[in-house]
Length: 159
Image 1: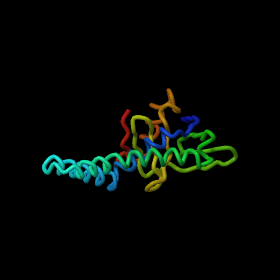
Image 2 (image 1 turned 120 degrees about the vertical axis):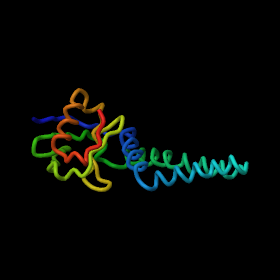
Image 3 (image 1 turned 45 degrees about the vertical axis):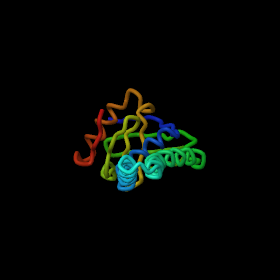
Image 4 (image 1 turned 90 degrees about the horizontal axis):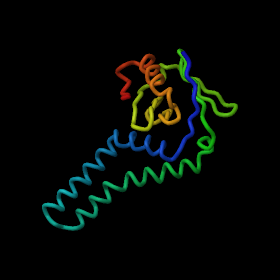
């Protein structure tokens, strides 16, 4: 079985990936916890500085991630052209223009899903972002192919 589709990267897709990646890590969880604790201190002490710093702590990270995604879309030339994906029984082939790269399924260290994308990690912060809107009617088939070729303990995908 082979599946082929083009991905048109967008700020929204990069932002979705950044949110997932950050809030599943220590910095996102810790930042949110600190912000909540500051707001809780405001409720107890009624000192407005706790509220201000708590809100800044909670809202800074998502805003910064969005601005970074927007900056990346403008700066990275590869995001301006569609990226072609071909999923086969052997692995994933990614091409853009004349450049073609292939990876075996064993290179996928983690496969996760968000509401907008399927994310295939091949490194700690290296991933292929497969937006559901670009996969269209093939989304379910892509998920099944990933589940069939990646170790089950590494797959955290919801339909």
